[in-house]
Image (cartoon, rainbow, N blue to C red; front, side, top):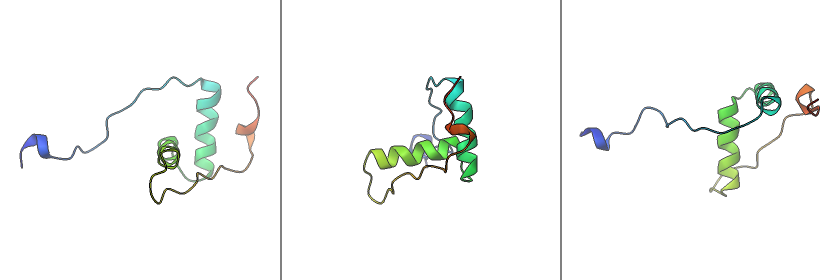
Length: 70
């Protein structure tokens, strides 16, 4: 199979600017559901795009991450 027809091993990295006071608690909230931040973002995107079979994203229960930034 030629190199240009092979499926890449990983998706390319993407950049986003997200403040630490949201990014860091987001990791803890995702972990509380046994997920990574990347997995939650992908789930949200599939739901947001109305992809067939994409369930609504379930938010975690309230926790320390729910407190507003100081």
